[in-house]
Length: 201
Ligand code: 5GP
Image 1 (cartoon, helix red, strand yellow):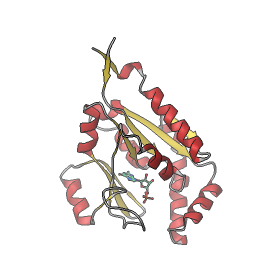
Image 2 (cartoon, rainbow, N blue to C red):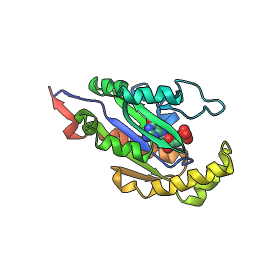
Image 3 (cartoon, rainbow, N blue to C red):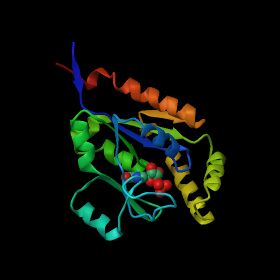
């Protein structure tokens, strides 16, 4: 028996500082997985490269793309806009390529309610829960790219986001990077065997 399927849309959300960036970077090494590079109006951090970490856009350019319907979802976080481009995601799913996106809880909620049935059916969402708020504070302070006030704002957002874990199909409690990575990879593997995703040829 031969089977075919559409791509799976892996959505990963984790309160910032949760170690998610490292996990996502490791997953991006998989050449069979398409990583959706988000757009943002936030300024690049040192070392961040345009079109690799984000498409860094002006507020005007971002607004024009909202108007033109280019975003699958977009959300405002910490005074900046973030958004996922629709076209590359949908095209890859249609072609049977799995897609990974790293977005916040608002973006994940928008995707769950997407008007595109291919998007809703493709979705497999994963929440990476920080072990506790104090650990999150330590990780954010260690990163030290933000000012104290920004750390407080990110912690407040993280605490709010942590309450939304039940909305996700999968929740893992963050441990070491290796542990998180293994858990996410196991989830991804199991998702490819879901009978409902398969069409017999
Ligand atoms: P950072 O500014 O630290 O790179 O990201 C802050 C938050 O924005 C993270 O939680 C990240 O998941 C989220 N984010 C990144 N890209 C997008 C996007 O395209 N849409 C939404 N809704 N959130 C995003």
